[in-house]
Structures are given as C-alpha cells and as structure tokens.
Length: 252
Image (cartoon, rainbow, N blue to C red):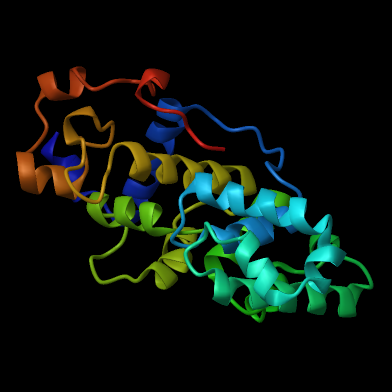
C-alpha cells in the first residue's frame, strides 16, 4: 500500500483521472456555453465567484443587448454593468478591445474559425488578446472545439501539487504543459481531468483545512502521507466512492 505514494508523477496523474472519473462521474462533452460566452465569461471570472461572474454577464447583455451594443457602449457604463467582477474598470476596456479585434478580423462576433485552426495557432491567437491567458484560451479550445489542451486553474494546480502529479515548484503556467504531457491527447479525457480536479479542489482539497478523510485520492497523495501517514485499509474502506450531491452542487 505504501508503494502507491512513490508512484511516478505520470502514474499518479492517470490514477487521479481513473478515480475521480468514477467519483464524480464522466462528463458529457457537449459545450456548456457558446464560444463567445465562454471567452468573455471566463475573463469576467478572474478572482470572482461564479455567482458574481454570471450576474456581471447577465447585466452586461441586459444593458447593451448584444456584442455590438457592448462594443459601442461607453466604457464607464460597461464597467458599471460588470461591477460585480473583481476589476471592472480594467475588464471593461479589455472586453471592448477583444470584441473590436474579433469583428475587425472576422467581420462578425464569432470564434468558429478556431475549429479549423491547429491548436497551437489558436492558443497563440487567443493569448494575444488583452487579459486572455493560457487558462482562458485552453478552456475555450477544449470546451467548445475539443482541442487537446488542458486548462489549469488554482484548484487543479493545488490538487496536482499535493498529490504529487507535479513538483512543488511547478507554476500554474508550467503545469499546463507538464500535466498535458502525462495524459492522452484525448479531449474527453482532458475535459474530465480538468473538471474533476476543479471540483475536487472546490469541495474537498480546500486551500485551508482540506477534507482529507473524505478524499478518494488519499491512497497515493503526498499531502495525506505527510499529514496522516499511509492510509490504512480502514481509512480507505471508509472513503466515499461517489460524490454525494447533498454536500454541494457541482458547477458545470
């Protein structure tokens, strides 16, 4: 049993995927949002709760009607509409510049050309936009166009470091490539890995006081070994096998 804690990172990454796929259940690959909404909503979500992100997005479209209206709006009015986000005065001009570039290049507000582009070209184009980093670009390409990329946010990064899938000094940015290299280049696998670890970080592997007793990864997690010792047969047997919805709603 203790040998599991010394598994190579690649093996831990795959075990993580297998176990969390069973724990949370496999996902439907259908996009959760339109590509333009995914891009702008993810930009709005930076350091902002899901509720406040959704509120900002809804207020923006209610105030200005459509992307043309958002682009034409006075920037101060747009900032007011998205005021529930962390940095509305910064995000408002970014949103308008993104819309301006898309319309100038495509003639309309669409990202569907990304479906035909090579993955690296799509990443390069998206990350050239103001405020769009690797995580946001990867989310759009994976969720909407099934490109083989892996978004890594703070939750995924925290779980990966604690379990031992990446080293303690690997940055969030670097983790995108390190974890991607350890998984099949299969969009459905990558989607499930991202969402499952995101949920795991949200609901179990908290930043402070993680719920280690109820963690299905305890049998090979470095953090668990360090704080509790090797998991006993009794501890493993007592671990929930599937997510209990009574503990919280999983945001899709």
